Length: 224
Image (cartoon, rainbow, N blue to C red; front, side):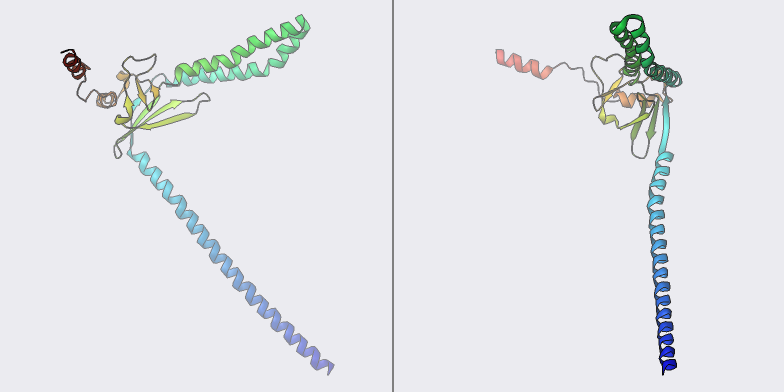
């Protein structure tokens, strides 16, 4: 009887092991199918933006390049490097100032060093932030993309249409036109096709002499 019971237990254990193996294999197959589906979805999701980006890049055409862009980058890079050096030298200036003339001399030296460390790159950025380094035109959407440089040498792209441009009556310093209240500066001589400059500035539209004839006639009628 013991042999028979052991044989039954062995058979039941073998059956349980076989069923467990089949379940594990089935679960592994399901996991593999889910992984394949996820990979396909990720590939589809990645393929669409890349294709859109490629089409956008193909439609873009550079119509303007600022010749001062390389020099401006070098000047900003030099200014940032000197600012970092000045920031690193602040503890040394404070230590030497304390040795020479106490707290007053240390504060004076740190103030002078801090001025050239922080104020110089900010002033340089205020002058150069309006300068357009590149201007691209998208013929499919009839949009322009102006590229400027930030304080830390990052490209800032401003997308606009001719209808978004406002030409100030009295142009400011380094300001050719405004795009959504943001001043930009371009050199008309650097456009590959002057027609784009004419469109952006609105010179192709009827001229408004701003004679205020309507207001003048109303004033005359009121006087009468």
